[in-house]
Image (tube, rainbow, N blue to C red; front, top):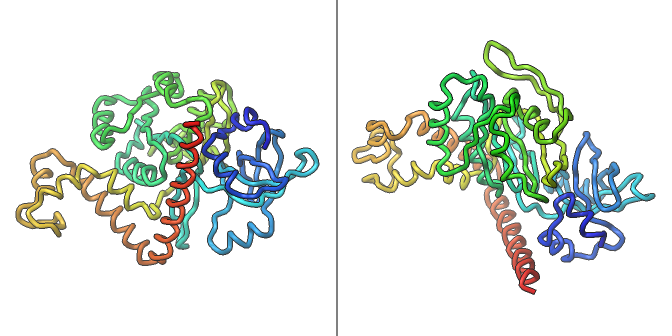
Length: 361
């Protein structure tokens, strides 16, 4: 095993060490994917950094449904010639993963970030303010296993900040909401509590919300290019074109991601339920167990809408996300999907038990 301290710089923990010790690794070493360019990955470990490519076995497994390595993954690598290049043999099971349905008509999932502890869901307080989009991000984030934090950026460009902040806190249901201006530095100190040594934090959001400016503030230098948004609709162009993992001055790891034009949920039924837990709680009070909340007598959900305690747009967004989940359920093999989820859950349970036993000793 390589020097633990050197691996810990990239987020290695006893949890991943327990996973590593579950198999025979030979001369291979653990490395973390910190960047990706098409079919090559930048990996880092105790040896330093180098570029790697997928082995034939990994390519074959990918064709059978196992996902490609992505930024944040811990992988098993055969490093050649003192780090000049490497062959990636296997991806270690992910502790968390943020996914979406692949853009376009193809019915397939795309992993956007792996092994993330905290996801900063960045939304803008300018003309692109959109609570419904944040609900969508929250649903997939809760499904991922990472802890979400809502970051409202561009406070310096907002004239009705208290109204927008209150609206976002209403849908957050206890999730932290932080108001900042990455351009001026206002409120940036409020993000420090999430930047713990060895923890991985990802910036997620649509184009133009200011993720790259936030990254530059946290890094303390201009590593990410920034561009102004359009004046007409406050939407931006893609500044960040690839996911990349950086080590912050305090030892936390920050992953910046390209802005997403769309985020179609993938297998996120539990995440949708958690995001709209308030509506689910109201639904439990409806007169009929199969109430669709569309006009039935004794509907507690519609009563809340009429009373003004529930935003009808929030209810409609929940319906929309549930329809997407039902569409995907019909398109993918639900039995195979659930079997895979059970397998991963069982594996994670075993590793967690090993991890806890080692901590006690």
